[in-house]
Image (cartoon, rainbow, N blue to C red):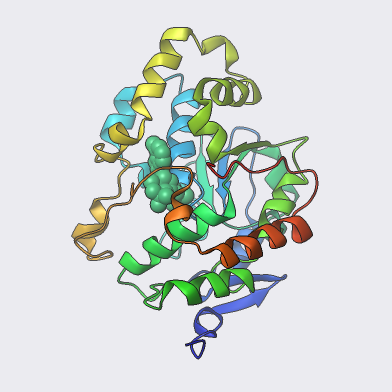
Length: 289
Ligand code: A3P
């Protein structure tokens, strides 16, 4: 049953110790030369770690809660997904507030990267694996994965999924913790207000963040509200034929869904990976148990 273990490797290239999907390789050179400035906001993450949630929060804080534009414009239009082949890096004028999303680790950018406000969201690797597994199974494009769960876990553990190694990704961003804002998905769910206050402070927007704004933002960003919000729920993927009809981008939105997927041995191997590979700087994960 392991015969297909080279699955991701065949669709990827190993560059600077990261396994990147072939589709984005052609853009790396342009990305390396792209100039960020201090008005830019970048939401960075390993895939399926809460990117969309942090994007919506960052957008609203940074625009002083411009819910009108958030209601009107798809999240993928408000942010430029840096490495996505069809996205023009220069889609926003230089002098405008620019929002970016990326799954690339810092090593693929030049020094101007750190001029921008960078918000990195990370999530416990067991739930990332579950979320990524379901996501890749529902997409129709070349990036799809149709193999079994056990094999997917194996691929994740040997650092052979898109943007892997997951642990190096987290380590590399966390090493910049003094100058960027690192937030865990679990903290966002368990302590929304505390996390958002910390984020607003990083963005220099703490004064704008009243209790009323916090209330409204918390409701706006709840799982149910975002699931029903056509500007963030990626339902447009269905119209594009990008995903199967059964697709739901906001799938479960929980901490601990991994308990429904992992066996004891797999869970142990993840614990082992975390304890041997992950930097001790990173606070212990909340696994929802
Ligand atoms: P699940 O698949 O576990 O449900 P990304 O945006 O990085 O692709 O991450 C997607 C994951 O974040 C999905 O996890 C999705 O449900 C979850 N998510 C998105 N918005 C959320 C919200 N408002 N509250 C909780 N989880 C959310």
